[in-house]
Length: 287
Image 1 (tube, one colour):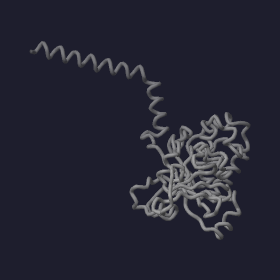
Image 2: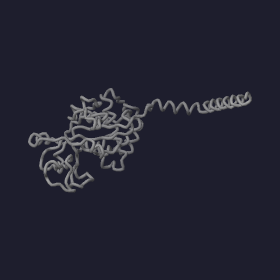
Image 3: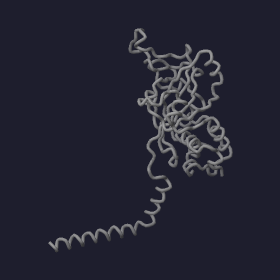
Image 4: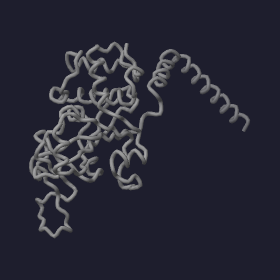
């Protein structure tokens, strides 16, 4: 058995399993889980195995899967969000209260686009945020952003990003994680990206620029990337729903207690009702 102590950061391992599980639960799992982790025959087997796990323990995991998880964990660094971490990783002043702060920030060391860094030296880059359903994140981290997968084409085909984190978050859709995740059962993700200042990236025009705008003009805080090689995912921002106050272990003990002592509990309830009725009757007699 491999445990979390062998695989280093526990939230990061939990995140990998959560993103994988979310993709596996989607009706589009055949196209989303790419590459498919070794050691499992299909999504149904993968889901069933994840659901048997205790928090932070990889129980009876195939050797190939352990190797795959280690390779993924080598690419990410996961931090709880603090003002200093937010400013350092995202590049935005943390005191800005209008910006929704994530619970975790994941730095992603992407190797899917080796030519990007050289192009960045030539063109320069801007920061853009991409909102997407959580079920897509596993595929994006492995294969990059692919413009042809985008369902929106109001301002032309390509990958849509915004300089406004709040705008990107509005296009994100929460995904369901595995039931014992320490991160909670739902999470929403926004991708922070570097975007090249090239002719293959359409940038919105500000109203203050003096350029005549119409209803088909791209909003000033938007990018549309026409070339998939001109955008690179650098971070994943994780927004969690409020986790349950009762841990899965405590909840399980409560259910087990009710199953074992339900008859005893009923007797106690009946006893107290009888006592209450007796006292109530005596009170009327005294009056």
